[in-house]
Image (cartoon, rainbow, N blue to C red; front, side, top):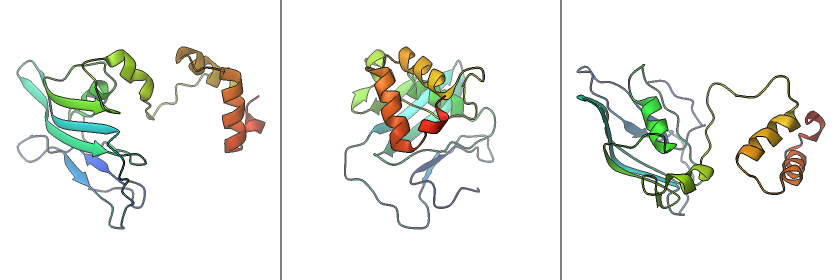
Length: 165
């Protein structure tokens, strides 16, 4: 299965075998990856999800530490969106454990959500708003304290100030 070499430190590949069974596997790039000794930021253990008689997730195990990220590959119906919905606390798993920053997501989803971020194939930015307005719009939704100062500080740190307006 193709992968972007040199980018992923941890990659969860979701694939179906010849029998249509989901086979998640953990993969590492060929070059040595720096592994953090910090505790896991995301820890998934024995994660299963059923929709009626259909099992969509079949015992996923994954541990991600600071600086690692996941790329999900798989055909339609292989469980990619279901896994993301469980991580985002939008859907409860049938069984297994999902911990984010040490918190079990099913026990207190509201306190877990502010810790999450995701980059998808759609940006969800508003074309008729400036970069600043988009950042402030989403910042208000997440109740970012001192929002204007935070936007200015991060834009300056990242060299993006000229593109805010």
